[in-house]
Amino acid sequence: MQPRIDATDRKILSELQQDSSQPLEEIAKKVGASKTPVWNRIRKLKKLGVIKHEVAILDPEALGLESCFFVLIRTSEHEADWQKKFLKTLQDRPEVLEAHRLAGEIDYILKVRVQNARAYDAFYQALIAEVKIFNVTALLSMEELKSTTQLPIL
Image (cartoon, rainbow, N blue to C red; front, side):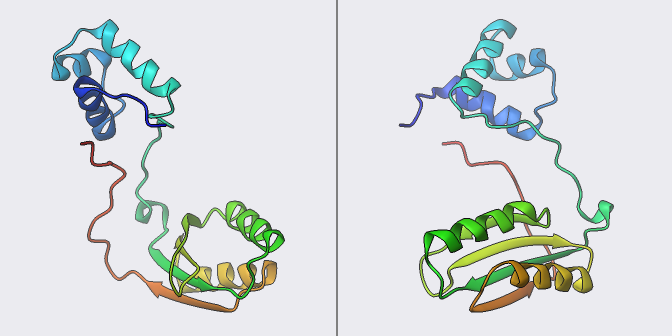
């Protein structure tokens, strides 16, 4: 069930997505409300699960993680045990930033961030040693054109 969110909640969420470290007074001023009601709304949004986490977004290249690969996986395995083992393998690999199960010919797509091609190969070798995979295709991102964590708040 989708929680009820009004226009003020949406303004608060937009501000938090841009910079969640800004002072509460600043958010309240920008959304046209006072500090206490804004604080209460933020608390409510957290309790409802609309706000899941507050994190720092790091620059991967500043940390030496210069290569981003999109990994397309096809499998002939669809049993619950295989899926459970595959999910655990993905969760145990910090290189995997995102993993999605897809409709269509490709079963899964992963977003993997590593130092270089050699580090990707080590990831790949570890992955196929853990779970049986029919086909893996890796696509190296040459340039990131857009990346955001901000959701479109309608």
